[in-house]
Image (cartoon, helix red, strand yellow):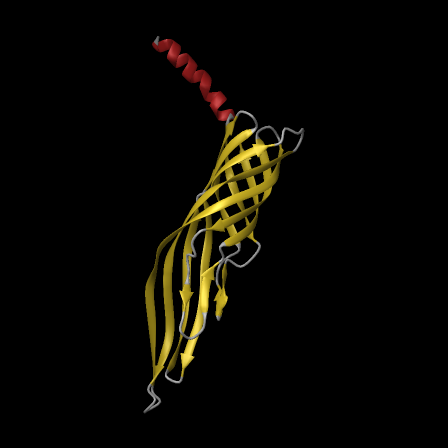
Length: 211
């Protein structure tokens, strides 16, 4: 009995390998992911990370990504009593889990996919400023340092693309839309500026995978 179990276990390894593809996915966001009044983005447009896909029957698959991007913004405030420039930078990780369907066409395989994407961002907020003593005109510089605490959001994802390549190496460019349920910045100031994370994002991504 033990030998039979071992035989089928060894036999299933190459079959399982054919059903799993691993690789990397990356691309760009085609709009600013920080919007507002009186603020400038310091985000980077690129997004990149590992991907794995589990092939299923009926031209279906489950794709799981781990996508990294850089999120940030800066703004300046001032009055006769001084000024302050604040910069915020955070590391953002998204973990999309998508159900994918491929059209059964030869050579190239158009596909659509959809699912959810938990997102977590955390980083630092720093500031450099000057206080002015109005009675003497003396200027005193100062710095501020704080944590951008971990903030979570959940995205609803829809995508479409096309897959092509060899039997074991595949390229899959796609357009992906994500709607986030939470503004992970949400800064509003009494002086009239505000900063918010874009809650609707469109990205152009390319996946490279081996199986």
